[in-house]
Amino acid sequence: MEHPLSNAAPTRKRIWVDLLVYPTHTLPIAAAPVMVGAALASHDHVFAPMAVALAFLGSWLIHLAGLFTDTHELLRRYPQEVEHPDLTNALRDGTLTLGQLKVAIAACLLVVIPVAVCFLVVGGVNALAIGVVGVVASFGYSVSARPYTTLGIAEPIFFAMFGIVAIAGTYYAQIAWLAAAASQPVPSLAALPPAAYLVGLPVGALVTNILLIDDLEDRQFDTRKGWRTVAVCFGPAGSRLLYCLLSLLAYLAPLVLWALGYTAWVLLPLVTLPLALRILPVVMTHDDEPTLEPMTAKAALLTFTYAALLAIGIAAG
Image (cartoon, rainbow, N blue to C red):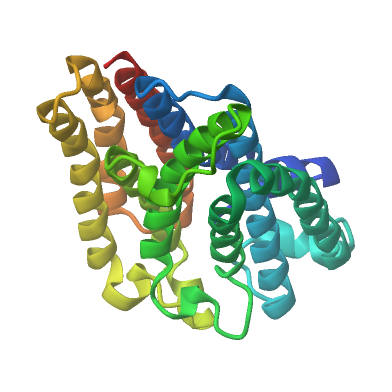
C-alpha cells in the first residue's frame, strides 16, 4: 500500500504517524465495514455497541499489523527500492529500523489478543475463525515465500475481506454478544441473514478501488518485485476497467437494496457520486505517483462517507 511522500526528510514522529499508521487511510478502511455491519444489526434489532467497538478495534489493529508487516518485508527484501523513498531513507539513516517495525507488529497483536479472547468466549469457534481469517489475509499480503500478491489474488481477497467478511463478521459478533448476555447458545453462521453478505458488496468494491489506485501507480515497482496485481497482469487498461466495474457495483447497490424493500433512505450513498466522479477522470488518465497519490486519500474518504451514509440509510430503513 502506498504512503504519502515529502520533499523534506521526515521526523520519526511523521514516519510513524503519517507514513506507517497513516490514519487518513487506515481508519476509514477499518471503520467502513464495521459501521455498515452495526447499522444492519440495528435495523434487525440486534445492535450490540460493545461488540461493535471491539470489532472496530480488532479490525483496525489487524489492518495496522498487516501494513507494518508489509513495510517490514518491503524494506527487508528490497532495501534499495525507491518505491517509498521516505521509508528507505529513514531505514538508511536509522530513523526507522526493522526492529522497531517488529515491535509495532507485536504490540498490535498483543492488544488484539484480549479482543480475540473476548469474542472466543461469546462467539465460540465461529468468531475465532472469522478473526483468524482476517489475520491470515492481512499478513498473507506480503509474508511467506509466496505472498498472495504474487499469485494474482490480492484484489479478490481485499474485496471479500473488507466487504463481505468484515460486515458479516461485525453482524455475527453482535448476535453472539447478545446471545451470550442472555445465556443462550452460541448462534451458528447460518443465523446470518442474506443482507449481511449483500451489503458488503459495495463496501468491498470501494475498498478494492483504493488498492487498484495504489497498484496502478506502483505498477513498475510491483513488476520488479514479481507481484501479480491487476495492473501488472492486465496493464493500466485492466485496472481502469475493474475500477469502473467496481464503482458501478457500488452505485447500483443502493438501488438494489431499495428494490428489495429498504426505504428510500438507503439511497443516501448516491450523494457521494460527485466525489467519485472527481476521482474517476484522474484514475482513467494518469498512472504517475504525484498525480495518483492524493487520489488514495480521496478514495478512502469516499469509502468512509459512502459507508457512513449507507449505514444511516440501512438503520433508518
